[in-house]
Length: 135
Image (tube, rainbow, N blue to C red):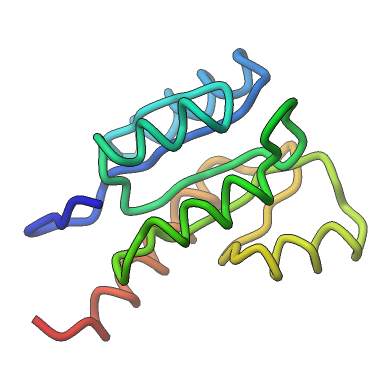
């Protein structure tokens, strides 16, 4: 995945609900992120290779490759440059939270999430990771 010089601002949004994905992408762009949007796991993996996101916001329930599998594959491909992984899902129960943690998610949000809160938590975690990475 690409290494970015100054500010980690690239976010990949993946949700099979096109309206939800496009709305979140629009809102994150308003918060200053450069955003790519995909609607399924396989195209998200290809986009991650080309786009080099600093963070990914993934839905958990998608046909074919679900968000858990997508998160595992993104982590495996990252080779030390793993993006922050956040899920934005309708699932609110402990089992899904635990599965998300096991799949490598850093942040867990349930729909509907406050876009400002999501944007700020992403920013804080990205800055924290940046502070501990040797230059």
